[in-house]
Length: 212
Image (cartoon, rainbow, N blue to C red):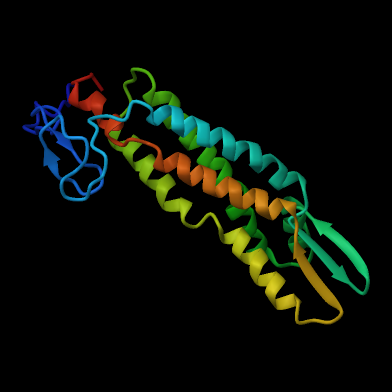
């Protein structure tokens, strides 16, 4: 079934020979380098979008590996130090019957980051070649990744709160480990990867009338 924009009576800026600003939505004639309203750069399609998406994604994946290998927290109590990785911290929380906190940390530190890596890679590879996927579902995936990105720093915030609270205890202290910095970088890189997408690429296949 052809679900092109023309068949449904929809006309895009590209069909009309114009360019839409992705920042403020203003439609202008081609040949203008910047939007006259918000001064953002105007381009019908960002040809380097997929390359930047993959570059940021690989950078995020690289720093996510040490984020799981090195200690997230270093706890000192009664002159004894103990290092905890992300997964090790989840196991410790389970042993202390803090199941709800363990679930939150596991979802925020493992499930969400890994899920973002998979979804972003899937979209990047899919949009780099012809396909017959439903663009509405692809757009939903992209929106979900952008929405989840703002909650990805929960684990880092927990570390910061723990460090601030425990420092008031004379006999105990908690310091962030190398993994905390790596995890924060991974979150930032994946957020940049998701934002590097040109969402108009998702709808091009529909506008061109590709069978679905």
